[in-house]
Length: 290
Image 1 (cartoon, rainbow, N blue to C red):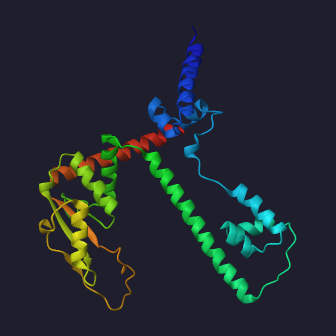
Image 2: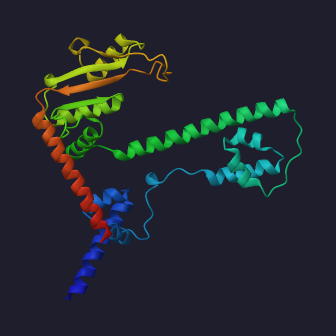
Image 3: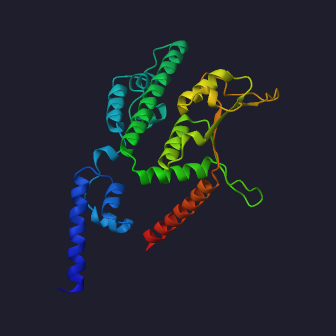
């Protein structure tokens, strides 16, 4: 067997595996990781002609909406009335029906204004539904995280939001501050993965002085699963009368600072892992260009 024949056979075997995985419902990324194919051009050739699974496609009901909008326009409905029924924006409706005759206006200015208001509310509800559907589909696509994936997520999370050492300010210690409870939970799960004892954690709430401080302390205690008595002194931000605060509703809970005692070695491991991620990402980009 010649070298060219062997190469062709290897490609066909790899393509057969890729097609089978695609038909099982795997995404491009999942197939790439399963078969260790890092070259996008090669992956494209392997999957040529194979449609993506339904769960990777963005929902699109525009075609049905367009046809219904045209039916309503032919029945004499105005843009406002079509928007009210379908929840579409007027700009989309205008594009869909601009070749159709305009209906005769038979309402007062007040009636038109009320219809327009209700139409906009319908549009907002439809957009919120689309937004929620997209988020739910993306969340479901993540699936379970392996220990390695959680490790890499945690390193990137810390390097984006944690305290970092500088040549002009030596800070080789692990301190993470954030207002997002999801970020806090993920960071704590990452520390657990690394075997960092929770007894080595310290917690401090940072919040505006005019907020409900005791409620915020109880909130973060619940998020971390820690008794409020283990929290350090809360840091209060003084109010500046020249500024207008926007974070004044019941969802405002300030920020939580998590510090890990005697964490210089852990910080160095984080920094080293981040350098490894940067190097690997750069190598992957170069590999895809070849």
